[in-house]
Image 1: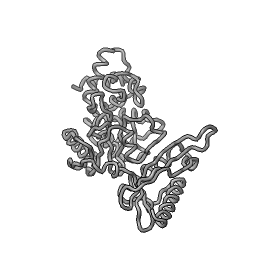
Image 2: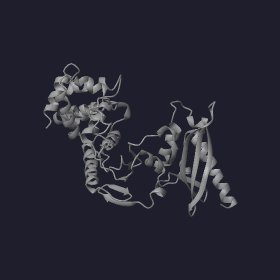
Image 3: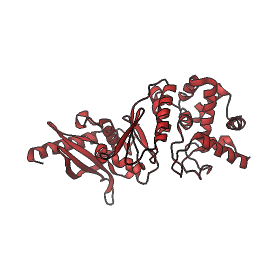
Image 4: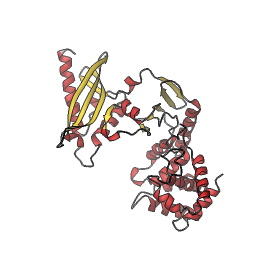
Amino acid sequence: MDSITKQNFEQSLETLFSEIARGKIKDGLLTPHNAGLTKFLLQQLMDHGTKKEDSVIKTLDTQLINVYPVATNEHFISISFTNRKTESNPVLQYIINLMATQTKDGFTFSVPLDYFTRYWKTEKIGDITYHFRRNLNRERAEKFNSKNAEIAKKLGLTPEKLSFYMTDNFQEISELLGFGYSISSNGKYRDGLGVVSKTIFAVMNHEDFSHDIFHYYSGKIHDRSVRNWVVEEGMAYSWGNAYYTKKDGEMAEQEELIKTLKKYLAQNGDVNLLLLFENHFWKDKSGIFEHLAPDFKVGRLISSVICDAVYEKHGMQGINKLLTLGAKPNQFDPFFKGVNNLMGINRNNFNERVHQLLENRK
């Protein structure tokens, strides 16, 4: 950089550091393309580790640790955030990678997504534009495009046009979005990410992201404060999928999981379905699906079967009643109140009624 460019760069960077510490990024600092994803990245950084008004980022030392040109008027930069409030050696918390683009007024910043994927292929399947390195499973992609349209229309919405990046694991997603290192996501690899700024990042390189598409569209019509997540997860298992891929790389569908659960119940006749539902909803230690993958949750599958029965009897009117039950005093109490009103299912008759619903499933 010449001296004037360098001065403008340093001023823009200092402003960025200041805005991050303040907890709010001005739009003028963001490169317009991918601005939504850049805001998401920086917000994750600013929000991590604190529920207080003052951002945790204020306690960190921030340093520019690398910068080099990659194109005309564009530089790749790396910023480190180190915990200085420690009695031992400083602890690295994050390394953030950004693209710095020169403008007439200084520099703007963005996630390095386009830079890292500049040699990837693209293909449009309906409303979904896929970005991938080598191959695309078109059958899966077409299935997801159909689910995207179907779920949106059931909820009374117009299907959205989305970008979908085929990523191998969560660590790759983090890198594409600018996290060169994040202490909060070390070891995390099975998850995908999205929908953020109309962009999806695949779960373990799978083209079907319909589980979270349900959550995305539901959030468009229902305020988060009234959404019941026992219902939400059940519906996402039913209309979407179980989110995680199986050990063979295929996505787990509701039908296969129901068959697995029925087989388990046939071999273990004394199972209390109510306890299975409530105790293995948020984390599953039942071991029922361990041969498929460790991530599936039997409580959510049971919720999906109940939600299916509500939809069959009451249609979208019944589903929307369930989705807006709220979460107070906890997620399960509103759920049982709702399904008791609509289906007569309650804690007292849960075992009998859910067994019956499962038996009715082929």
